[in-house]
Image 1: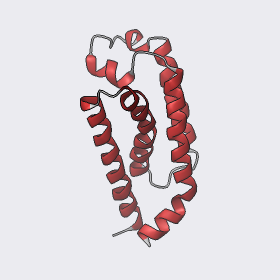
Image 2: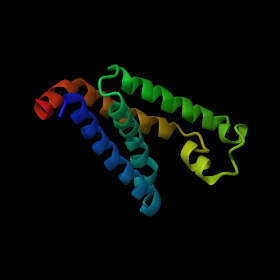
Image 3: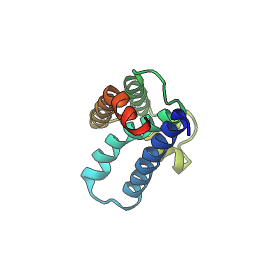
Length: 132
């Protein structure tokens, strides 16, 4: 199996695990800390590993770009972009895109982004051990 295929499978497996954890948190967690903060921290690695699955050798600044994207989404929530896009009547989009701005969410995205950046720093060493 090629290195790139192994990378994609590895990143896809991590993404799938994070997605399952996010869904379980959304459906079953009634703990305010886990639902409000831990879930937001996990959003960044979930997006990171999803994109790494698609583009295993993309730019090293991916964690920064994802953080900026997350902040942009959060600013969009401040301006109620779900309503501006005409999607406020669809529950799925209200949940997916969010409806309320929070500095705490941005802080959680930063924590998740730092975790992704640390992974990015050690990615070549990790991949060398796993895929060589």
